[in-house]
Length: 324
Image (cartoon, rainbow, N blue to C red; front, side, top):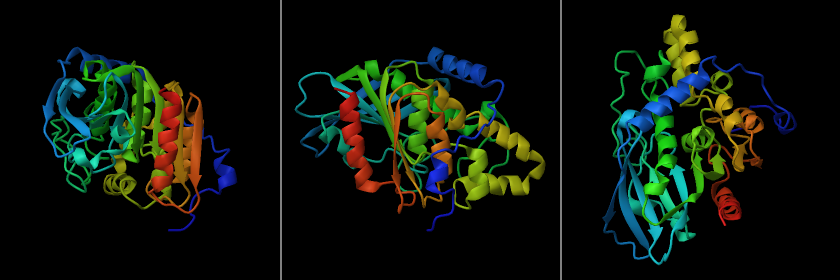
């Protein structure tokens, strides 16, 4: 890896003026209203594990269009009352895996909901949630960024962002949780979903942690990096140049650059100057557009790891400060 994007002094002032889709407000209002109208009560089934210090529930809730989404809920076993909740979203290609893979936040004393990622979980951590979306008719590049990309209504990320918002919606139905004290966290794709949940949710999001987030300023990302997942969209446009404008217009509906001006909760971002997966200028663009109080940690020598254990420690401190 090497420095390839804007220098740091320019990143601090990088505020691109990019027009949002004219129908963005109605698109998301309709999408979320339909998902909430189709919702059914949460199922939370306690499961036995070898983790003596953690109580685990296998959770199923309804996301996009009332479709089932799986999650793990880990609680400190010694908890005696409702706990603040950390909702975590997962990076590209990963699923919820197993409960013992998610111990950081419960070890810090929080209830911790880990949302599975529909249709993913076959690349580096297993998943359990199918994606029965209506996008089978169109061409796509292997991966998820171009799945259904010729129509915002059938686009994969419309469904996934809706799931993320619903994961916040259902917090009051979870056992052992104080839904009035809630944070959303994630890295890469998960960092983008955390921003989406904070931007689109009606729930009480009080803190956001977004580590090197994906889906930010996508039109720039596809022109400056050859790395996947953004390269998936490049390959699609190369093969279908006559459909490139349509594809980019679809992605505009989920680009966090257009959604974060709605967010109000305090947020902690990270950006890495050698990150070819989520280039730093795309992260800074979303950071500057974010409407709520915000901080950003910059890692000069990191790639997509985006701060590693250093940022995890910073995240724990940040959430503790906002979920008393």
